[in-house]
Amino acid sequence: MRHIAQKEPFWVCPITSHIVRIIGAGQENMTLIEGENQALLFDTGSGYGNIKCLCEKMTEKPIIVVASHGHPDHVGGIGYFREAYIHMGDLDMASTVYSAKDRAACEDMLSRQTRDVGLVIDMEDMAPDGDKVSWHVIKEGDRFELGGTCLEVFYPQLGVKTLLDGGRRR
Image 1 (cartoon, rainbow, N blue to C red):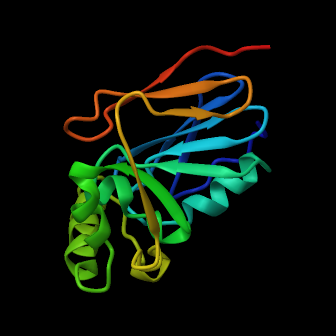
Image 2 (tube, rainbow, N blue to C red; image 1 turned 60 degrees about the vertical axis):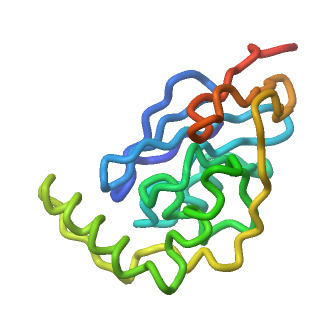
């Protein structure tokens, strides 16, 4: 994975050579995991700043997006992507987050969160509406083969809380 200079609104924290923790302006956590053939982004953050552009600076591989659950600080950046995976129990919530209808409420929440940590954000830098995202439903035991790394969906009853890494294979 390529390393990039850290710029707001994201903080990039390498964990291993193929796993990077990304922290958004609202203190939300995202994780980019790179395999030999594909990468997987776990959550898209609040939608402030272009998470897709950031990930594309770190990897040239196709990016699969998985949302842990449908809250705005986890799927707010979904509008930058064409498709994403989520548990059925969170599909309705995720489908309306950052839709044109709910955008104002989400922006207000993010504005309060960032103000609390001393940041002032420009709403022009928010993700596009997520109305056109194609959602795919996942369940416990589903696997994402990234090439050399296989991630398995674990404990999705209340959203996908964990992706279990079966370990790097050579």
